[in-house]
Image (cartoon, rainbow, N blue to C red; front, side):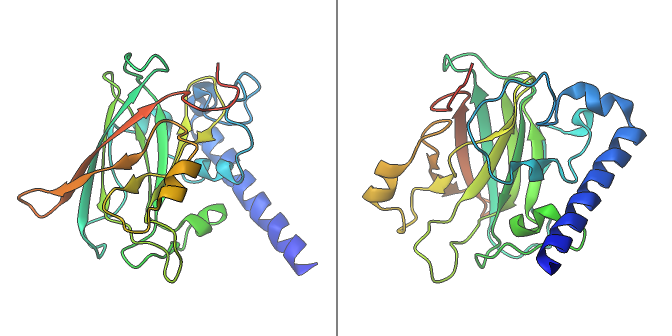
Length: 224
C-alpha cells in the first residue's frame, strides 16, 4: 500500500507541475512537445519512463543549441560533444530537434538533485538542447564513468523529440577507448540513430572533445 501511495503522489506532483507550466505559458502546449499530444505520430516502440524528459524541461523557445550538463563545480574531466543531426536521408540537416541527455557522474553514479521526482533515477547531470538551423548542437559536461562493479561501458543516454512525433530513445553513446566495450556488445547494439561509439581526444585545455552524429529514423521502429 505504501508503494502504491508513493507512486500516486509522485504522479500527482508531476501532473501538477505540468499544469503550472501550461498555465504560465500558453504557447507551451502549441509546441507539440508532449508525448501525449493526439497529433503526435507514435514512433520508436515502447519507451519505458521516457516521459521523464518533460520534467523540468524549459519552454521550447528557451532551449538553445548549446547546453551544459555539468556546471564548473562538478568533479571530473571536462568533456565537449559537438553534435549534428541529419534527416533519414543521411544528408539533410535536421533543425529544431530537441534532445534530452543524462549520464552518471565521474564515479559512475546517478546522483539526484533535491527538485527531481520522476527523474531522480537519472540523476542531476541532465540537459536539454535543440539543434540550430544547420542541425548542430554542443554539449558541455564531465566525462561519465562506468557503473561501479558492473561490466557496463560508460555511456550517455539520449531521448529525442521531433515536432509532431512522440519522444523516443536512441542508442547509448559509448566511447571507443572504453575497455568494457566487447565485440558481443557491439554486435548486439541496435544502432538506433546510428553507430554512436565516438572517439574523444584531449585539446589544449585538457578537455575531452568528440563528434556525435545522429541520423533521425535510422533503425527506429514505425518511423515515418
